[in-house]
Length: 69
Image (cartoon, rainbow, N blue to C red; front, side):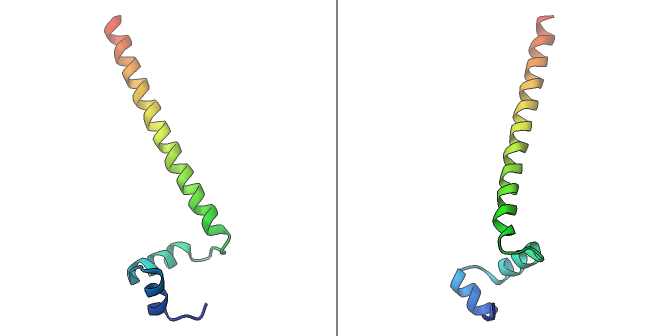
């Protein structure tokens, strides 16, 4: 938005490397899409954790079933 990078990172309290990493990651996104993208990433993490938990439950149940038979 016209502010020098050094001033912007000082205002935000972030490292210059972080600024450029965010810039590379969010390039091409409009300002309204960034929060939506973050929300989708958070949901994805939640779903991956759910799948991992269910997979572990399945393995434990199969072990119990194998021991009882």
